[in-house]
Image (cartoon, rainbow, N blue to C red; front, side, top):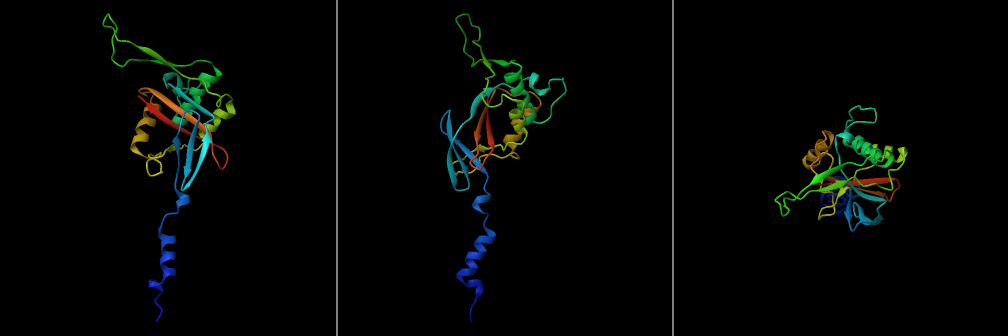
Length: 189
């Protein structure tokens, strides 16, 4: 008598039904150098050229809009930062020190400035930040190391939203293989 449960067809159907589809895997980016990277989505990988790669500082000036109203959400704050830098030509800076001292015993400090970028130069491009997919870095397994719901990511975006980022924010903008743009950011503190 034929036993469907033990048949190869059942095994294949069960694997298809109960195994998450590779195509549903989230995308991630492997940074290769300052100008290019590898975009991965499931088993699909494609080299991409970065359209912009820059560092910026998020300060009190970036957490309010041009009218002085408090912004909500890290995307709005990054959008305002880009307007402050690219439109109003008002880059922020922070003083940094690694604990070294000069010959008089004073801490050696240097300034880190916001960098201009070639992508977010128009209001339309800056508005894209509200809907652009956020692409996380790939782990060793080729899957994203974080997500928008992870504790590490929430820690840093909460810090941005209250204006207490301890260091620089690095952003990369790149074209997605399926069209449109994605962005990746990381924290340096």
